Image (cartoon, rainbow, N blue to C red; front, top):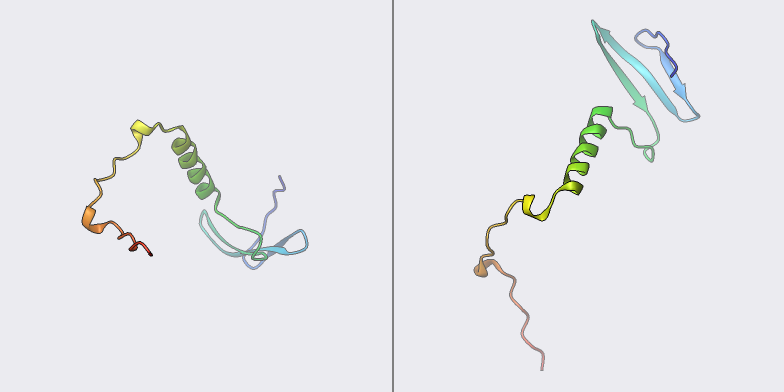
Length: 85
């Protein structure tokens, strides 16, 4: 891991096409901007961790643990097309 000290307005380049800019430093909070090509996904780490945890829980769930759906309303069911003769 590279650890560096930067001030507001300073930038760091990652590879050929990703730039991280320090936008603001306030107390213990740092705002950064990430300029990356649209094909490179950029996610907050805690969002990825939460999504992975939810996926693991869903994959480990049994059918008995899944929420029950209400019974289907026959009035809401799609109508079958008439038979073509």
